[in-house]
Image (cartoon, chains in turn orange, green):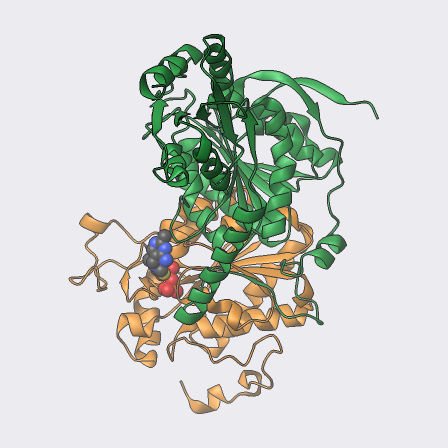
Length: 253
Length: 360
Ligand SMILES: Cc1ncc(C[n+]2csc(CCOP(=O)(O)OP(=O)(O)O)c2C)c(N)n1
């Protein structure tokens, strides 16, 4: 990408969201988590709902999300965030509630909680970071790991005859009647970041009229886990992740 | 005001008492012998009048995590299950204990291990009083022996839970859950309003208002010094419970030579065994722990001074007897009699065991 394109006025950071704390993020340089945190903080600030938001952090790299976004949080057990959020939203229906989950958390150990919260049409937002790997525990295979992709527990590359196929959770929940908005986004370019922010905003706005659940999948990089430079990881994302996880809305009703 | 007297199953009494005590939410998953709890709640439709939420979860794992979510909001929330389901909840219970949240968990125990039997048992004693899940934590454990106590312990459980910010378990069994008895239901209490919760429970995730710090419900602490400090704080809390919350009942113990020790439905059977023994001139008394944690160890230690021996009676292979032995501390013989697999001991069997194992 040309530096002139990056320096366009709409790409310039004018201010940091007031909701982002000054705690230095522990994420690796190049990781998508930090960018998504920033978008969520901006959306909450722009909507003026800081006083009315309760979030659920996962077990995974984002376990400490509560240190970075200055709102009320619950830290859930691995995979259970949608159940925790169900408890919060059912008992405080006037609050904006969201979960923030990785692919191991949401698509492996927490598949049941994810599917059933979506099927019940729980009126909260799921932010799903799909980086195709278990980041926090050191780069093991995730359900979303691509065929042939090398991880520490698939050192020869994912063998689908042994480990099954990449799990496409967004495709699975989109047909559920409880779901209203299911979209796949990314944050690898300024344009993508802007689109992702719009999607997150929409998913939050949807909570106002209680017509079903919203899930925003962010197809992400994990350059440390993928063992690539951040720039190379962005390329690899486009060439390999996007064909398996195409960007765009899966449902919007 | 006129008393509200009903004829109810223990499980139904739990449900009715939950609505009456101003419970905010129940999350459960069906399992025998406790399914009447959620069935009664669904039939009563409390969301129509008190606003209480009742939700059938996709699993016990989900149910306890819904409780974790609700409890963090400062709400009075509960779940119930029976043994296999309670095993599934253990990770969640550990998180709730670690995050220091109040909640109520009802275990209507059935025989195990594994899928076991749907018949009554007390085989989950260790799981309930020694922690159950991972990490050093304790639940406050209440053991009802009647339908009335099933009802009464719901309110008591929430009171203790909020007092100590700790999960509370009602450890019942298939007999107490299924049997019908007369029960006086408590009057309807009001649920707390959002404003009352915000004022009372400063830790609750009610939304970060400008004038306060963010509230974070978590059991995570990666710094070892801080994690040790957290653990020490928990242990101090359990110590206070041990000093202030022990509840028990004695029956004919003043002049007794020998003591039976039993909880829950076994205590009902032992009550009868005391009478049978006394008809035969054997002076026996009964100590019934009502709180299994904190355990009435001081009271048992005192009894050990002037009684000749103890017989602990349980519907398991001998679990509470270990705590009785710790309290008696070798001063007097402590014997055990139990039936397993869902078999309920008879008063005659207890008397026979007393004669052969304890009475010289
Ligand atoms: C019950 C349980 N099992 C396993 C773990 C270990 N664990 C922590 S994070 C994690 C995987 C996280 O991967 P993912 O959800 O993809 O998030 P990422 O770190 O990539 O953001 C695992 C397996 C745990 N904490 N709890």
